[in-house]
Image (cartoon, rainbow, N blue to C red; front, side, top):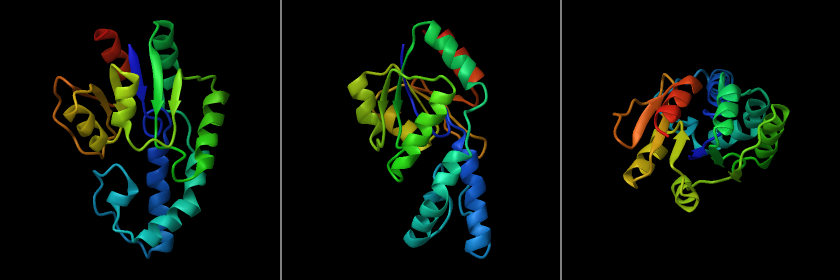
Length: 191
């Protein structure tokens, strides 16, 4: 099976770290301004920050988030088992688009953990196009908007949903997973 895979929130536990730094920024720099929508996958939708405030957050905290994020619990043993079974992994990620060094930091983290994927699409804003080019059998992502777009175009997806994010109705093309054990079970049962 050819598996498309996002990094942030799927392989790298950066989304939890992002939410921590978002709150630090909101409290320390924006007078405690509150979140407006916890179901949104990206900070731009979770808060009503101005473009200038968003840019300040990016410049001030993105590299801290990257350096303070580790791999998702359970990822390494499941990845190794799936590779041994012959599955191919294609990384399709926007990482590196805001700050180039975040790509380098992800490569460092993956290398330190002995993880080498089969192919990489960095700074990728159009995951649908990459999935079509690669003819992936399934894509794993944590952004419900991306999942919906993939499904609307006939591509199967695993929605790696964190507890706060919007719940989607499962279908023939979409199944929700919450950890790497769920991913392993789904792939083993649907080869």
